[in-house]
Length: 510
Image (tube, rainbow, N blue to C red; front, side, top):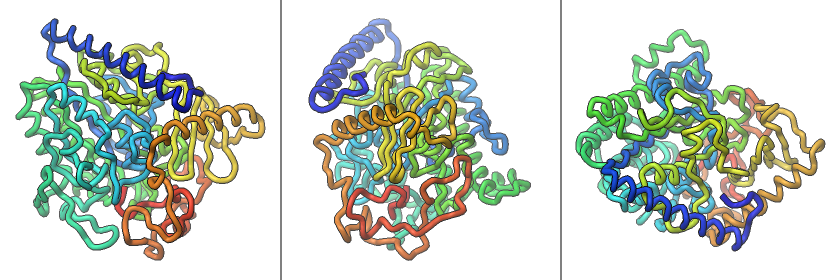
């Protein structure tokens, strides 16, 4: 990876050169695997939607059940310093799919009228070019326009919803504007009224596994749970009947419901004898929601500050597990700093396929997976959500969420409770310079219209939700709070004159 301070055309040129060198090495690896007669691994990528940082038993939760995900962790490697690309949905998914920061991937905010540009190269396109069968069942939320849909971004098969959320039984989007049906099989509208959407995901996943059991495949399952609307099945709700916190009860039931669906897909892998041939990756897209539409909360960030929409740890530092029985360590934990954008180059590394021919920001973490002593590939990591931004370098993290910078040392203060900016102005200056260099690099050539709104212009949808009871958390939320008591109306929808208001929920959900 380039030095932390590299920027401009020189930095991009160095990175592009490194990508081409890495691609040549992966070609050699593929050739060696072919010569040895080894089948390349299948890849099963599973994503949760708005699952909190602490909301699995193997990550610290004691009040909800996640037996299948805990079992997956026991068969593989669990990361304790894993970060996603954004604390909101679409940018996080764009980062995962492309191995690039959301800004470089062309989708720094939630998809609406505009989605991820078609020229971006996804994991599906990368593996499809190498002969993999590719399928996606679940939530897309990377664009609905021509060239932005799953079939145009490398997926041979798709059944799911294109936007940010749907009712799980009618498959309609109800949260702003006219109600609209949003269930599709490839590019054709698909109707299964009354069928629980996560069950559709499991059914299609199992069918795909049956159909492609003899051929290398990439299966992407972005579940739409535990994202609102909270619609867990009754028997999961009854599991938590004694729970006193009603919001936590709704949320816990939905997490356990999702865990059940994931367990059934993993069980199908076992049934077909594919588990030892399949690299399985699980992660969440961003921290738990505290939106009104999620009943104000229910998820937990544990010791971390923040949640969805924020650039504190609770919005970005999330569960992630990788498993490949017989090929990677079993039941181990990693404390190195890794990132969602690392999965594309890591998958390329394990599968022996060429990386995309353009610069990427991630790096293979194969050595990290295989050894607790391997160094992190990152000298610094960056995030920007509207006007909020953060940079982490080593144990230091600088957050700009308001007028004053907030500096934390995460080795001593996981909750980011104490602002050390006045005590360490040199660190603030250094990290702010890293952010400025990163922003100049990643925004070079990016359509600035994605970041800016003119007076009177509305983000993503023509309907402005002002006055409809939408609300957002105040800045400076309590470090360990699981729900937000103080909220105010969102002012950033129809009168923004600079960057998109960072805490607004786009009308398309997310």
